[in-house]
Image (cartoon, rainbow, N blue to C red; front, side, top):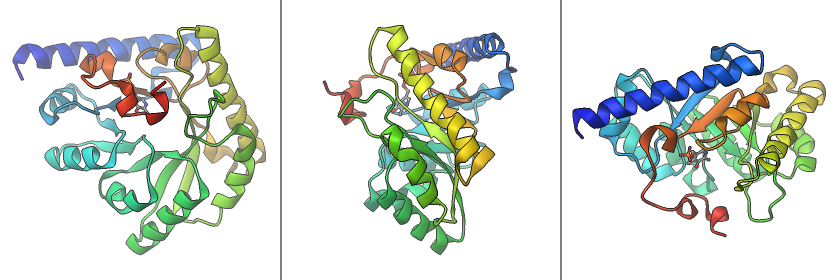
Length: 247
Ligand SMILES: *Cc1c(COP(=O)(O)O)cnc(C)c1O
């Protein structure tokens, strides 16, 4: 990696932070009300290090093996890793080797596998419940109508600390449809904060990526997951990372 590459990463990171601050202001909130999780999938550790040097501390990975490898390569850096992709129950052990947070909790069997492993390790984990806000059959995430029951089930898993919700909006140039997905998630969050046993602990809304994070913040996002706007386009198509995006 050249110095120019590193400077470009730092510059684009600054631009994203400035846009986050502007969008937060438009929604009547301070910039600090929105966490930026920088998504590092397919990005080499040296380029990630340039972002860390530029002050970025929160990183996200979509796949367990890649996340583990990168976390090891960057061991000793002052960063926190979020697992944001679909997690198979047989990869729980490996995910917990690097992840400080899981944003893609989408089924009871995964909650159970995570809790069992966490109890053995004697630690807890912040989790977000992934919701299928677009209604596409191919997407991961709980259907909105299953969320309330799922939150009640989660109370049995004492190592899991539910903090809120995560979604992927529909992949479409139709901004109103994207906005609708974000509103679905926000309504679920508002209702859960009033009615779920976990109550006000469920404040987080993780929604918005490179193409739509400003829109998401306008609709109340407290966490945005952004990769390409900082690191440039990925070499692999998204279908590699979201099997559900193949179509
Ligand atoms: C890759 C990814 C992102 C970030 O997408 P960009 O287009 O790089 O901003 C966000 N969320 C999830 C779950 C991802 O896999």
